[in-house]
Image 1 (cartoon, one colour):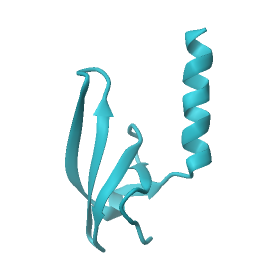
Image 2 (spheres, one colour):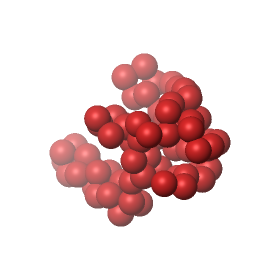
Image 3 (cartoon, rainbow, N blue to C red):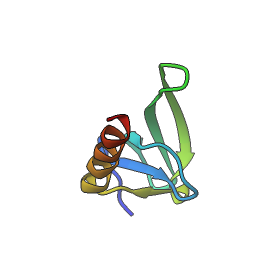
Length: 70
């Protein structure tokens, strides 16, 4: 799986949406916004531990959250 900066991924075991900052064959650097502490976080992960999300999947998640707020 080739990942590029700007791709949206998540851990295969489940996680918030993560944005790829850099990627190699073996590891990726990601950034995300941790709402529980209101700050950005970053980490480097093994590339085998993540899967790419379709932007449509990410948009649907946002819509579901908006409906829950109403």
